[in-house]
Amino acid sequence: MLVKTSGLVLSYIRYKDTSIIVKIFTKELGLKSYIINGVRSSTAKSKMGFYQPMMLLDLVVYHKETSNLNRVSEVKLLQAFQRIPFEFKRSGIAMFMAEVLSRCLYDGYQNESMFDFLEEAITLLDSPHCNLTHFPITFLMETSKYLGFAPVSAEEFFEELNQAWASSRDFQVEATYLDGLLQHSFAFDQNVPSIARRNLLDLCLSYYSAHLEESKEWKSIKILRQIMQET
Image 1 (tube, one colour):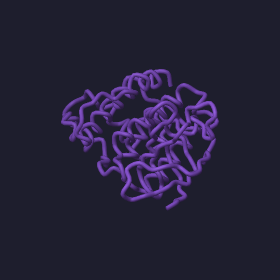
Image 2: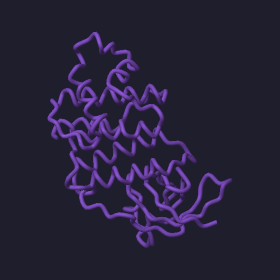
Image 3: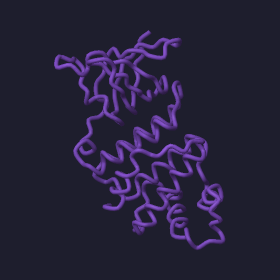
């Protein structure tokens, strides 16, 4: 049957000579894989630009419960980004967001509230009012709420990481920073030393890896560290 839904692109892989298989987190159906035939050919009706990570799409898709790979009937941009494709920092953060979601979400996972949050987050990233300095860490903390392992305080966060934060002075700046992010979310706008931001980012990724029970290196971390150093 045909289903109309909004979708957020996470990733794609090339398939045969001119096609791709794309993973899209849809609002109504959850995370699904779709084959897009001929999109890499010069005569393609659809555009490869639609299927870049974190693009928001308006879709009509074929849906069959027993199939792991479906097709797209109609596609158009739900929102045309004005800054993310053209600014290195924003595009780098978008790549990081896509990697985080690709690791956290599984096929068939469906959560409309999470989709709404992600739509708001990527829209904010494209906004001229977005504070890029704190965005990646705030995104990790806000996303963890929907994944079921959000810390309620810096104390809980560091205790889970076994950092003995209460008796150590090593992470006091990071702990204060994290409490500020947990309280103010994307509205947090205080100045924080770059070393503390980098340290907290690394700790947040360790926190995610522990909850996801995996130890793979985060592919986009080098680019993200560079971005955070410059913001």
